Each structure stands twice: as C-alpha cells, then as structure tokens.
Image (cartoon, rainbow, N blue to C red; front, side):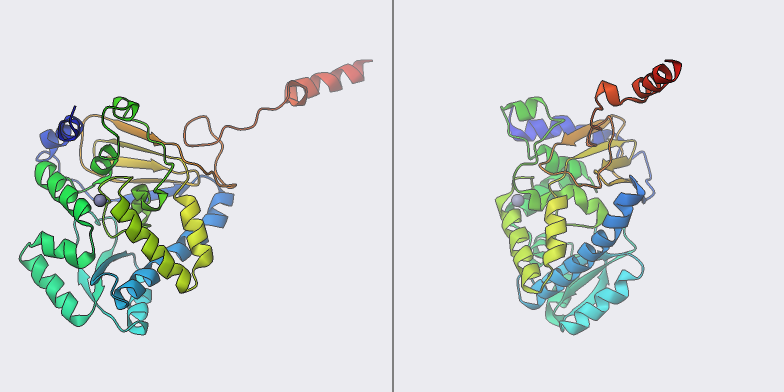
Length: 314
Ligand SMILES: [Zn+2]
C-alpha cells in the first residue's frame, strides 16, 4: 500500500463529519497525584517560559524571521518583557490549530512582522511557512493534509505519516516506539510545549529534528540547563492518545489532558512506549502507567493477618 492511500484510509472518516459539528474549543487537565503536581507543575511552567525566551532569542539572532507563540493569561506580560529585552517587536496574531490558548503573538523585527501580516492577509501560506521557518517537507505535508482533509489538529496525520509502510508498523498502526527523534514528539503541543514551530511531518523528520536541536543549543547558551533536561526527559516518556467525537485525551505518566480535536465517529487509540518514566509517574493497570510492584505472598495483608491470628491463638 502506498503512503497516500494509507493516509486516506485512516483520515477519510474526518471528511464525512467535517460539516456536521460546530466544535467548541476547550482544554482541561488533571494531575495523576499531588506528588506529581508538586514536582512537575513548577517545572512545566519554567519550561514554558524557557521556550518563550529561546524562541524570542532565536528570532533576534536570525534563526527564523518570525516566531508564533501561544500564551495564556498572565504569560502575555512576560512575553512582552522578553521581546523588549531582546529588542524584537510583537503583534497579536491568529493561527489555526492553536485555539486552546488565550491568544497568540507573532514575534520578529518590524519589517518581518509586516511581511508576515501581508502574507497572512493574502492567504499566502507558502510565505507564512517560510517566515516561520518551516522545513519544506513539513510545509508540503501540512499543506497536503489541510487541503485534503481540512483538519485543525494535525496529531493524527503526522502520527500516521511516521509509520513505515510495508512493515509491522503500518500493519499495527496503534503502536509506535518513541526511540529516536524524541525532541520532536508533538503530543506535548497539547500542553504548549514544543521545540518546533509546526507539527513535524512525522515523528522521524530529520529537518524538524535539526530545528529542535538548534533551539536546544540556544537554550543551553542562555542558561536553561535544568529546563532543557526536564523537557528532553519528558519528551521520552510513554504516552497514549485517544480521540472520539471531537475530544482527544492525552495520557502522560504525570498528567492527563482532555482537549478539543477534529470530529470523528470512530474511536482512535494509539500508544507510544517511551524510554523513560518519571519517579512521580502514576501506578496503574493501563498503559502508559507503571504496574505496581508485586508484593511477595508473605507480605500481603491477608497473610500478615493470618500470622497475627495464628500467633494469638497459640
Ligand atoms: Zn518534515
């Protein structure tokens, strides 16, 4: 089977429903436990801020002409301070697929922002992608799937495009081993954490990975060593993603996120075993949680009670 037939077989269900349902945009999350929240809430906030700073710095150094940054509430004032410090301008912008956030800002030089606004106004998506630094393969892929399937959420097309055709991958499309290129693991975009400006065309796109690695180098240069260590660790964790009736559920070892996605009447469930699991990750029967260590029979409560009972009756 060729790749475009494979994609069509898995994505055509979205075409059937796309006119039917007006979808409200939402995103909610819940921590798996208080210890997980105590450790990781602060870390995720610090990673978010580090990513803002890295992208603003990357723009000021000319790595890409414009960066598009989604923000929530109070993050806007921090973002505007960062732009001032780095002598770059920003304007409020709109970008498809970022509806889970309060707003979005385009960051760049005055001239590049003018070019960006002109390209958006003219619906010149090639120039927009160029200004945002999209690799050509990712741009071509995004253009293809948005034109053919009119999807807002590119999680599933990018995931399916990661599977190698004519291998067990494609025959068993519910599973994908997150062994390499974890820097471009796009599932964390639901939490606003990403090292690329766009959905990569696949989980093994070398151009997107090169972009992510360059951004990480910038982050280390400006001192975000701890944040980068947490982020690169988290990107390697196992995860599962489910979607049905316009709601996606992302399960990570420390947090679950529910958010709006494209409408489908068929349930999609995928699992990505990773190579790392955090100390604060939850125990559970189902993937991606860790199985609780089994107690020796002699340590179980029933046996302990029986021993007490026996010793009392002798
Ligand atoms: Zn690509």
